[in-house]
Amino acid sequence: MAQAPRVLGIESTCDETAAAIVQGRELISNVVASSMQEHARYGGVIPEIASRAHAQSFIPVVEQALHDAHLTLDDIDAIAVSAGPGLAGCLAVGVSGAKALALAANKPLYGINHVIGHIAVTQLQFGAFPERTMALIVSGGHTSLLEVHDIARDVRVKGTTLDDAAGECFDKVARLLGFPYPGGPYIDRHARLGDPHALRVPQGLTQGRAGAEHPFDFSFSGVKTAVARWVEQETAQGHEIPVDDVCASLAYSVADVLAKKAITACVDADVYTLVVGGGFSANSQLRAALQQYGERHGIEVRLPELKLCTDNGAMVAQLGVNLIEAGCAPSPLDCPIDSAMPLDQVYMQ
Ligand code: KG4
Ligand code: ZN
Image 1 (cartoon, protein in one colour):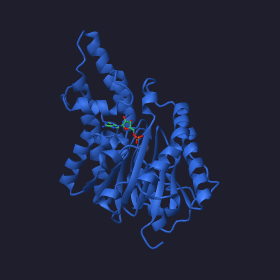
Image 2: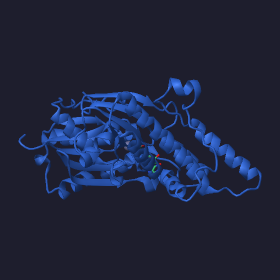
Image 3: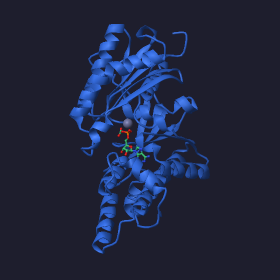
Image 4: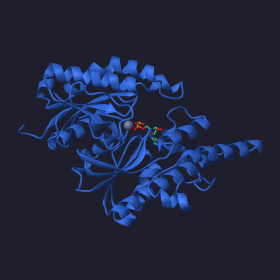
């Protein structure tokens, strides 16, 4: 392989069927088909509907990614696919399709960890990782701090949420306020118009013994309860709910605790680069808080551009490139999917 590795990445963990081609640190093509519209009226992703949409979109999306890149499967060095974590039926469609392509075109296959992909994707903007990097992963299903010693081989969990994820917490409060699913982006937009000090939103695991015992863990389960109780009380008193203020109080409190703990983790580990990834990294209050705390402590914060925050094939392809560069053996063609794939497992060996 004379040039930098060229990888086709395929993603189907939830409601996006996506394919992209990455060569080295360059994005050659990127195609995403979403079934979100079909789930919105149910207030959450319906796995059966999502799996069916993947089965329909898989070939068209892969063909489009190859077409946009003016390439055929023959020109690709390897195929990478998300093998977990995610919805089992959705993963099965993507992984089976990728295995079939790998077998037919005689290409190596890498069944990668979708969450690690969210971190890997920032290399397209900022280049390779420094020797030691901290990662904050924030999505609908995960809120964790990871120590990245080697993106292909050595990722360790520094902290994680003990209950809800930040995205999940936003989606639950959004539902309470009557926003459609997923509510995160609505809270973000309304928060820009409100007063962040209108109500007190608790920051879990920051005070007293719990805070001392869990300096790098998160807890968001108390947030929804606190907001729900406040809304109930206001309604009982005949007050109109100041939606913008509720969103602002929630968003600034959650962004603050995420940013504070992430930067403290960097300082604690003597690391000067923080990489952020996952759908919730699109959140503008979090982006601002991270930049602010990062500047204050001399830590470079690497935020993905908005189109690469949500699920995409580029993140999968980029991690595939990393695995090839590190000389990692491909996944066997009988490798399983794992809907609860652990965060320190980079790919299926
Ligand atoms: O990574 P992702 O696309 O899917 C998972 O793997 O979970 O993340 C989706 C999550 C949802 O909870 C959604 O509400 C949240 O990311 N999200 C946001 C924003 N954009 C997406 N939350 C807050 N503000 C946003 N701008
Ligand atoms: Zn994701």
